[in-house]
Length: 127
Image 1 (cartoon, rainbow, N blue to C red):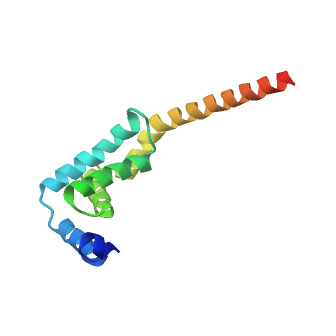
Image 2 (image 1 turned 90 degrees about the horizontal axis):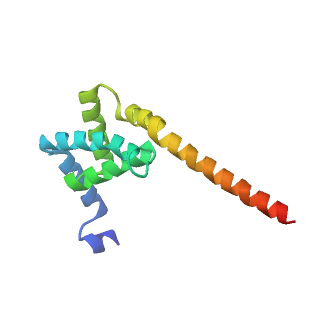
Image 3 (image 1 turned 135 degrees about the horizontal axis):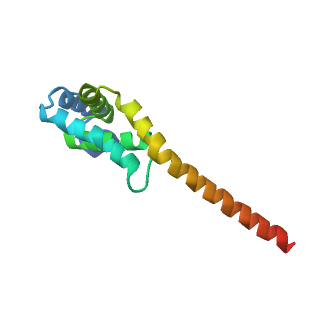
């Protein structure tokens, strides 16, 4: 099915992505660093999201831009971030998540619990 749809085998497609990863220009490292640094922004701003989702979104975008696999993009992001900042992207992302996403998420859960309790109390008072 893959071969019919894309005019090449899945293995040939995988090999072409691997070749792309091996022959990346130096500017790809700059783009990977920018993608890695964007993870913190994705966690902090707008509708916050957990670290794993922000990392995944940045890796997917980078992989599409560079024509490489998502795993290759994640590895490139991790390598460039650690080389530049001296800390792993994972640890940095989790710290940002603890500071920004987790409080927002806990507040949302608390609001839902209060609403559920109010609905329950109203239904009990009607009986």
